Length: 574
Ligand code: FAD
Image 1 (cartoon, rainbow, N blue to C red):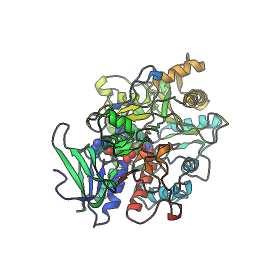
Image 2: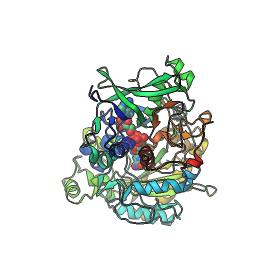
Image 3: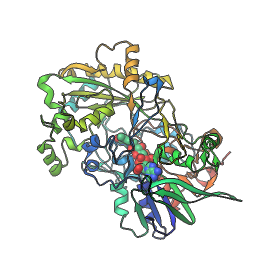
Image 4: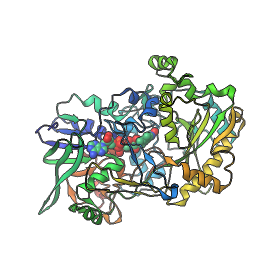
């Protein structure tokens, strides 16, 4: 098959965010043979490299998995579209590039040995290469490029003034843990001089020429082979297919080798279940032999649900919007914008559109912000913020005009609701079911109702108000809490932060899937999970940085360069 007949010390399933980190670090040891199996193509496409290309990556026929949730009764029977990158670099190739770690308390609340805020901070800093550094809380020696956003728009400054007038403090650095996360400011971005700094570009590409690293694209893993022996179960390799109904192959492990699951929070639990690792009842229902009965596989799914407030600009201010800086009146990308990007790596193509904003507590009883406001200097065309991006990417095709204005995308960043990933079928080509289950905890809906009220307060301050004609979403007629709740249920969309479905911990009986000491799947030798699925509780910020942090730690552990929990504090499975 495409992976050849050789045997590998590490088979990395999925070539996404975490996988590219591992592939680089593990293949740095020339004695280890490393294989990456990625279902999608490389991440070389221009839409990936140029940040504004994000509008063409949502629902992309090849570079996105095109998945939606099950019908959500509580969301007026909608299915929620859930973007997932499908390329080398994974979702770091299609995400909004915002660089947020969350806050120290997010990690301390996990209560896991080795994962305290102090311990994870070391690895955030080690992984980072901050363009404006050195600076406290930021690293300059790592591979993950970060910088301040490079697109300037007068509306950003007016948003800051309005936020200040509404009583919010300024925050010069949301990743500086010596201060509260609250306030308004620039969001740092995972970019390198205005180019997307996904993990394909930053970690995998520099290692591609190594003879001991093999990367196979267009290879969809269908199962981890696990052998049951007298002394327990052990992974032996990975089955994969090169096209949907095409040839099947097996990538085999060398003696002592390991399979590292890096297929993300949706497909990792899917593949584990297909391989016999998961809730026994679910597996039996689909005729899958149980290897390790782990109730937590696919459970504990978390995300940041989001709602939008948008307002149209007065006619004389239409042209201030990022949207009219990108497109001319005929919906062609402006040559000036292209030239500015090519020569300066600045201008409206250097932004994913949402890299300024605020973190806010919607209630004074909270100890951390429950809300992230993302300010977009453009008017949403659809109250579903993700759909609005998709429409923008297709504007030429649709021949629509784009009005000027502003949008505040409001995310419940410390959401408490939990959903799950389930099996629709034992056929690996049938994607798993996703019950996103927003608002199973009513606190999240309350956050978004309060968020719209706060966004209205900000938009009503003179610095912004002077530009605005009318609120388009939800629209002024939606005024009571009941109106706002209805609007949110009708329009809530994903903040694209799926985590938790193969959570790390110490007790499989309490839902842990992998050990927090070494990320090993309970009950199977030679099998670990290294991706966003292991985060047990969602951090209050975008999840890419935390995913890279986990992968850096896993790589150092596997290289024997560091442990996670010191030996004296190794948790013992109950
Ligand atoms: P991924 O990076 O998704 O990698 C999984 C890989 O596995 C993919 O390449 C996939 O194609 C592959 N795969 C899946 N199944 C198979 C299979 N069966 N066989 C072979 N390969 C397979 N985070 C931020 O920090 N900042 C942001 O601004 C931000 N915005 C986001 C916007 C969007 C639209 C999305 C989708 C995410 C966003 N995130 C953001 C979240 C962040 O990108 C993810 O948390 C992170 O990339 C997850 O990394 P991962 O390694 O777990 O999975």
